Amino acid sequence: MLLAFPARSTPMATSATKVEQRSSRRFSLKLPVSIRYADGQAREVPAETRDVSAQGVFFYTGSQLVEGARVEFTLTLPPEITLTDSIRVRCQGKVVRIDNDVRPRVGIAAIIEQYDFVPEAADA
Image 1 (cartoon, rainbow, N blue to C red):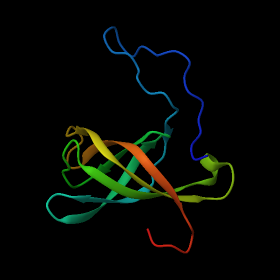
Image 2 (tube, helix red, strand yellow; image 1 turned 45 degrees about the horizontal axis):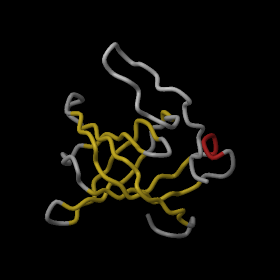
Image 3 (tube, rainbow, N blue to C red; image 1 turned 180 degrees about the vertical axis):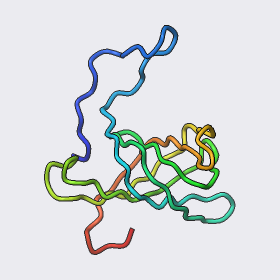
Image 4 (tube, rainbow, N blue to C red; image 1 turned 135 degrees about the vertical axis):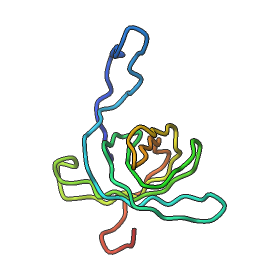
């Protein structure tokens, strides 16, 4: 199973008022990705991941997306994550958070709602 990481057994407090809500391990991975989304017309923009988990991804891009936008992207997970060969995965999901504090880029958090393994010969 893709990114089948153990869930944390108890929430981890990150501050006095904020509780950690992530249920799976995040991997700090700087991977190039191409994000596809629609904002009245289909667009494809380059991006770079900051971290990836089984449920989501955080990436940086030069384009502004909106919260709730549907996104599709393909990642090539390296052997240190898969514990085997590199694996290409096409993901579909939704933008859940925008971070405009990393100018000139924009930070985007997206949940992964569906994914498919992509054969090596297939296009991203």
